Length: 263
Image (tube, rainbow, N blue to C red; front, side, top):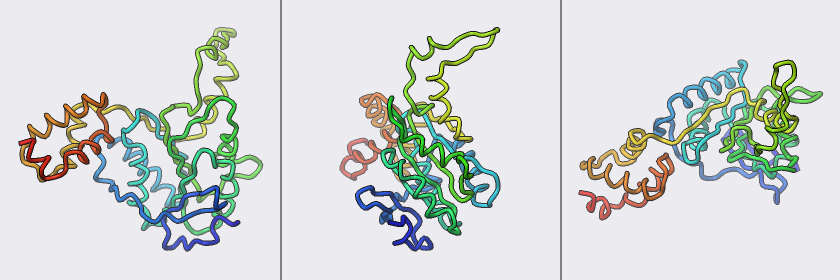
């Protein structure tokens, strides 16, 4: 089945690959997160926006890997990117790691279309023995055939190199003539991540940044001191300060009755 057959990409900004359908399904309800809603990741926003604007303009641009601590806005940044640029021709296809074997066929079906496509791989990582990353490699840099100019891959991961790293691999590295030669296993681990020309790191929020994220979710709340006290208590109980924790705090305390308890 052709991946693009059911689609009017003029009115469909995003789709997801479904293996049981052997094709794409239009995403019916896009996450409404907006660019200005994101807090504490200004550097990453600016870098990804510059890269995406070059891509949309047909100028040189990179595949992007967003890696780092959980819940720090990696996936939200990709979603906000689509909402920001979909009117300028950006289209997005979400592909699960287990479906990467189908990636060459997906790309074949969109490479001649008059839109710019980002293949979105969320929470991407590979375990020992997995081989599906090989299909991703060919799309990132091509093989005999160059990768299409209207397709880029944006991936998020908690792992910087996407693959597991073991102490035993480091012990197999050698020194030759004063130069360090990494073991073959390390070369394999790094080679996939190296294909992402733009790599953006994400870290757990400081308390100030966390409270900024909370304030953005409660713009009309008067008792900031009480709000911050409860937000810090909530984050301490969870053991992590990040954008996801701020959203969870909002969902728990957003009702008027709960807000009244904070005053």
